Image (cartoon, rainbow, N blue to C red; front, top):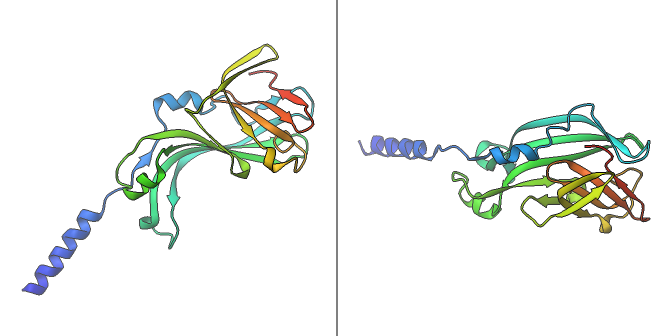
Length: 197
């Protein structure tokens, strides 16, 4: 009899432990910052026949933050929603990938209890480990008759000019929360600005 009680108790405990990991989803306020105008095939020009890029792929999905070990459900910390955009450079045809996603502000806290929703924010991740947090201070940028109010400046100084292209020749990349990439300053001082929204 004791044997059966132990088995029943174990099964009930296991059932209680089968909770769903939380999903950090895009909010209604995020929608204007997901670059809906970045549609497949659209070309953005920055003042030169070669200084432009084309949107070649867009993916939006739910993904998992993986903490290592065997790739099974219990090894994932939490889920989050992301939008992945792939651009093609006109200089050499190289591709540039960046990802917009909603992510917990305190990652360690979120990992400690992946069944509870914690405060989160919108983040954009770029090549080379660069990223910006929406909510950080921004500046204003005006050029070509256009004004952008919520611009973040990415500093690529430590990476140098590794190859040809808008993104890789830039010392500073200007990214607006509502319009995406709006400007580039090269290491040689040349400036490129978005010509049309």
